[in-house]
Image (cartoon, rainbow, N blue to C red; front, top):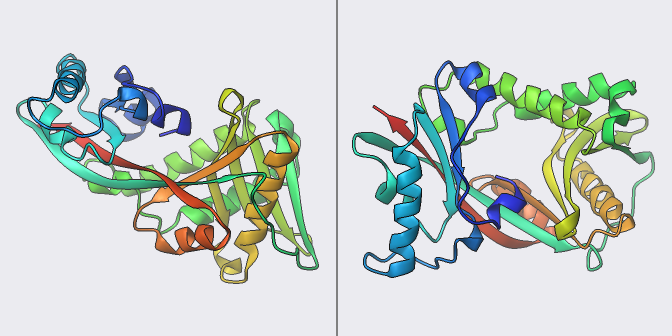
Length: 272
């Protein structure tokens, strides 16, 4: 769920052709953002009941086998209240968003041999760093548990390949930004950024250090480079998210001065 979607209202239910083809069943997505205007779900409260009716109506009209629903964590009962009769509700974990204002961020002193490369738009497509970067990102997906793991109808190997496909498409997109962290000329980390210029936000979609290079203090240098790049582009805020159980990286963000900004629930609504 992008930062922009997390701050919008109720989306339309959209068919995900990519996920449907990958998993061999109809997959749709529906999101409820902060602009829905509901602070809590209490039966009989008009704004909450109206939200439930809006989301329920969109689900009733769906022909999908699985709908991936995301919504603010404070609306914890939403998935259960909107699921069509006969559908299963699979809780699929929470996302935690953290943020920093680029003007407030304080980088650490860069150690010798560290370099951060930045690629904008489709510059990456012809770069000799493309393959090693994709290899780094693929390595980072190993062992990472995400919302797909809640659903036994999603085959594990297809999930990994799907993330790699998404990373490659994002890297090659004309509107994307990629960072590559080098240590003594060796690629050790990479990040993918989406820019929301109207919000003056850079969202870190993915930031990873290769497994062979972890626990060496390198992640902070990658984060420093990302936020320095945002500040140089006049961007006021950088945001990043992860699954709530991923405490190690959230501790790293806290040490870097980022603060929690938003909590989002994911549920899979599955037609029986």
